[in-house]
Amino acid sequence: MTTGAEPVRIEDSAKRVRTYLGGELIADTVCPKLVWETPHHPVYYFPKSDVRMGLLTPSQHESSRSEASFFTVKGGSVMARDAAWYYPDPKLDELREMIRFDWDAMDAWFEEDEQIYVHGRDPHHRIDILNSSRHVQVVINGTLVANSHHPRLLFETGLPTRFYLPLVDVRMDLLRPSDTATRCPYKGTAHYWSMAVDGQLFEDVVWTYTTPLPESVKIAGLVSFYDERVELYVDGVLQDRPGTVAGRPILGGVLGSADRMLGKIIASARATSAANEAVVPARETVGTLEHSNQQIRALKPLLDETLVKSRRFGAKLRWLPLIPWSKERADA
Image (cartoon, rainbow, N blue to C red; front, side, top):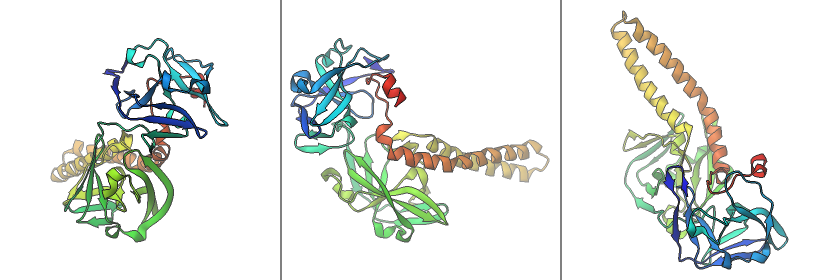
């Protein structure tokens, strides 16, 4: 079985994995399989023998994408429709007699005796947090909002480098509390601030992990900015904006790079036009490029709003090729 051009990767895990619904244990195994249905992170499949099948009832589920059989899961007084499925005749033999649960439909997940959040942990995913003496400056809307010589750099597999700064090196007078909180299976729960700069509110542009998970304890109490939405200078050099939201590519990063590139082209075209007034095409090029640049800048507020909303609901916005598409899910 493949997803696009990439084969589905499957690995055995030695962890004990459990999942609960309504406070009741639904599945408990010491031999789960990790399945990368997408390149981003793995999901758990349970041997059918380690699932309390008496709590699963076959459900009628129309699907045009696979031959999966679905179950409604009942735990305590809670019922989750189509929250489990398996493939009676799987294309991958490793998935025979293996059951998959919808992560978000279940109440709790445990690896050994530690509760895990968002998704299963990838054994190949690594986080390194290093002390640094680099000079880091953050500018928003032309205002210097952070200036530090004591950052900690967080290097995470497949994601942009994040610069975590002491709070005392940030313009705390510009911070505004936010109700937004997100979870990471490797770092813990992040809490957010917005920043008020020149009468404009930049929502959820700063975050902190007050009590991170043990493997990320070195960023406790430090703050980081969304490089996608600010100007970040490291040792005086303006950094390219990552084209990501929580590690996923977005249009904003592309437009940000295009905006800066057009600015350089415009400056060059202006210089050419000023040096030779007879070069009419150069002046016309300036006008065309400036119009394009204005259009790109006009899109930025919409992209900022989309970024905030995508981050808040990002856990729900993912494509899982092995999850059969249903009419019911499409209409939801």
